[in-house]
Image (cartoon, rainbow, N blue to C red; front, top):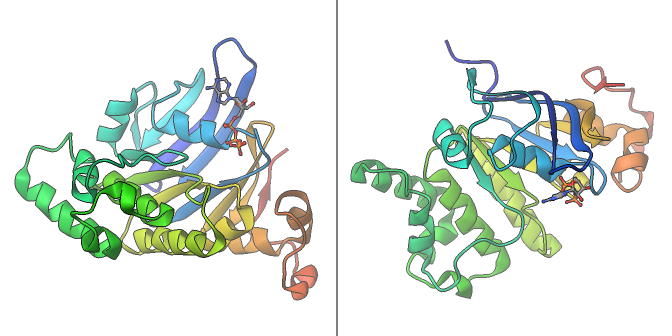
Length: 260
Ligand SMILES: Nc1ncnc2c1ncn2[C@@H]1O[C@H](COP(=O)(O)OP(=O)(O)OP(=O)(O)O)[C@@H](O)[C@H]1O
């Protein structure tokens, strides 16, 4: 039977070395076909959540499940094989390599040529710029185009969930919009996404579910449109009130859960 969630981080505690814990009992769940977005202040631990999910940082306690299967304690390669692909913050394309070579790096765990070709066709269709610039050096592409190459590379292994760490970082507003459109396309193609963003308002406009992190836990979670319409949340976490003043009159969302 298919699991209700593709990714479950349950009651996770995690930190770096001997320093204090960064995540203190964090729970996040990603249902199939959804974009779940983590927002919150600087240093809240958003990127740390993705590092725990992709096996870069082992949790001190708690459990991680992918499609119902316990994968707690797995390293990055095993997590990738289990279905979690991590697109890191900043730029990670190899500028001196072609787009094709960059995308094919994502297939290094695959052996079956027919499967690889099928995935190449899938990502080319999803990201037209990847198809159009297939033989170009990746370093010649714009920042937004390079981000799409990173997305394409991450999709080569048919991940269950793609972990996107601040895809808009360093991009101008127009390019940021294009990148978020590609996130929507990924969801439409059936890929679930766990997204971390500084640009909280923009990310919540794209996401289905929002999670507000504070003090290492998910403080508030609910449907993204309800979080966006909540004036209190807007002031605290989203840099001011919603542009639409009618949102001031919106009732507190019934799907929004406040923890603690
Ligand atoms: N490699 C590391 N070694 C030690 N401490 C780290 C490391 N990476 C992050 N931290 C610390 O963990 C805390 C959470 O960092 P994290 O990057 O997860 O937050 P964030 O919410 O993504 O913040 P930002 O929006 O600023 O990227 C911070 O206090 C940070 O200094």
